[in-house]
Length: 393
Image 1 (cartoon, rainbow, N blue to C red):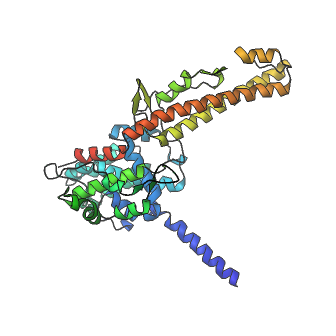
Image 2: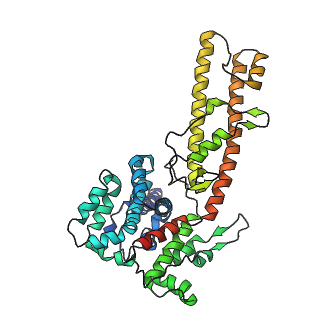
């Protein structure tokens, strides 16, 4: 009986945690949304703060215009994400679009056709934007647009990062540590944020300006966290393939052409927004990681398929000879026995050499990307301010 009682308690606890971890699935109408700031949305989704925050940062750090967003959505497969990510990326997109179109929605809100206008814009993307359409059709959210629209004459937005710096400390374990829980607490309420960080510096005169600085710092906080996505959602970046194809020699080793891959899509300026020596590279390490290892997998698969073709050819010709070898590999095969063991050794040597080149490639790309990321450490906040000024009255 006692076992049953404890099992029931444990099951109930796990079930409650699972439900609490799915706040992105709940309708926005079930939340007490007081304003449309990023901070308020994240505060309302406390159980999904990490996941929702990741996707909000994703949109603000990559898209400063709707054309690039549309292009991304046209090839994006939401089924490649985990279930929780699917609901949170939709919610994050709704939040991003409210900020992107805030002024347009407000100006058109008295026109009975404005909802149809946005339906036409996002025709073909309803699986991602259906919530946004429902939200702008609700007068409650229309009335809250003033909480994120600033006045050009009365408001001066500043890229003040001292609130965020308060929560970044030196760490013995690494380069820095982020007191995330304290930051979340202090970034959750605009009035508290204004009183604690801004009033004593006499920087702000309005709550809306405080809200803008609050969201700017919040995006900065999200940017210094690990934002690794569970799926390769990035697009082709020209500089990665340039590095792959440029590095052909590593000491005495020569790179095999069996693993060569090329971009068919050109360069995506959304993900390849960093320029060095007339080549485009990733602007963030998180984007580089997902894209690089996806292409690393592609290289390994291509090499393995070539090995299977060579193996089948060797069986048909009744000789374990690997075709089209060059240089040292050709000489090594020439003076070794043509048997299965040596055939596998040659293949293993091929793989080992390519992995050594990939290690060097990643080091080069990581250095370039890290320099870009440091120069533009809060790209999401910068784009947030661009949209803020674009929508100012």
